[in-house]
Every structure is written in structure tokens, then in C-alpha cells.
Length: 297
Image 1 (cartoon, helix red, strand yellow):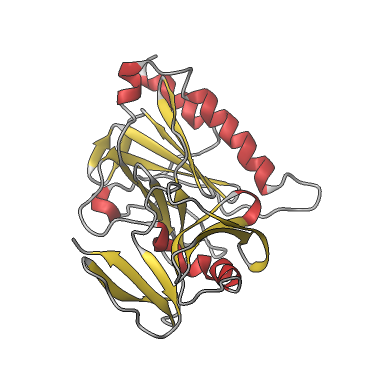
Image 2 (image 1 turned 30 degrees about the horizontal axis):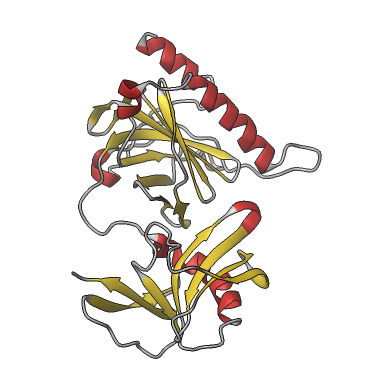
């Protein structure tokens, strides 16, 4: 299929383009793209979930049928993407906002300056003729083989991120910039209510969180290792509250990225074992949440 037809097909998703914003983050990946304003659910109208389902189906159809081995190879590995939001203020003035995405093999992080970070552990990738789809926590990510103009020139890929009923569009490239890589603890402040609810069930203290991530229907899965070495799987709401699941976990059951890092709640600094470094974990407002224990060798 010619590149022009692929571009028209993806634009048919209702993601209008404009050159309202040039954002130089992530090595100049951001495109001159216009994004839809944040959608609010209205009585009688479609919910965010229904809106996302419709957009998801359209995007999936646009990247074609199942991939062969050669096509699949184009969408394996890690990707980095970014884009801008052309949101006109009520007084008619300027563009505001932007977003960045780091898609690793086992985790994805979606950042919007001033609005925090969201992400999650990635599921199995769904490879197609002209793109790839993967779900990571609350994010549905599509990487399409569609040329995209950025501040650094033309890139070979376009990224679409579905989140809270909105589809974000921007330019993508293969590979991740050097530096600190996102982990499950990259969105730690948003996970604290669920972590606290799970920690209330702990019997052997001090306990550490070895892994946490958002899952379906506004819930969070938290893995805890108690002081006696026992491990537990806890599921509760994102806002905390009642624990829906609290059960033992086998030593053979390990999630990708589990235990690197670990998190310990409270003000008492834990001792760092060999090849580990302890760092304070702080919230969005600068308050101390506890301690992050990372591998250092």
C-alpha cells in the first residue's frame, strides 16, 4: 500500500494534524500534531471506555492483517515517542501541553508535563502488517509504520496512545535514549493508596513492595515480600480501600522487572545489601513516601 494511502487511513481515525507546537523533548521527536482536547463523559454520551474501544478498533483496522516474520521484525524492540497538544485557550491564545512515551520490552511509561506519569507492564505485542499494538496498564499503544515529521526531521513511525478516552498522536523511533530507564516505580506516587491498603495486611515487618502495576477496572496489583521472606499478591482499588485478593506467591512466580527496584514505606531508612543502593522516594509535592532500593551492580 502506498505511503499516502496509509497516511490517509490513519488520519481517518479522527486525529487531525496541525503545526501548532514544536516540542524538543526526547531528542526532538515531537511532531507538529493537533490532539483532541481531554474528553469528559457527559450524561447520555459515550463513556471513556466506549470511546477508547471505538478508537482502538479503528486504529487496529488501519494497521492491517497479521504480520509475517519480516513485517514483525520492524516493530520489535524498544521505542521512544513524543507529541504535542494544540489546545486553544478560551481567549484564543496558544498551544499548551505535550507528552512523551518510553516503550520498553517489559514496561511503558507515558508522561505529560504537569499532569504526572502513567504506565504499566506491557502485555504480549500484537503484530500486524503495518504496525503493532500493545497494552500497558491503562495505556493502549499502537506503533504504525507511517512517516512522521518531527523537529529532528522525518521519522519512520507514528505512535498512538489511548488513555482516558483520548487518543494522542506523535512521532516515534526505535531505541531509547541513554539515562535512567522507567520501571514500575516510575509512577510510585499514584500507586501509594493501593500500596498502603496492601501493607495493612502484612504480618511480618518491615515489608517491601517488589512490584506494583495498574490492572483492569481501576484496580492495582501489588507484590509484597514480608520480613520472614514470604511473598504475597495483593489486589485492591487504585484509591486503596478493601483488598480483593491477598494470597501467597510461589518463589518461581516472578514478574518482569520484579524486585528491581523494591520499595519500603515509612521514614526509617533500610540497610542496603550488597549491590544495592537506597534512595528516598518522594511524592509530587516533595513529601517523602519511603525508600527505593535499586540494583547498583
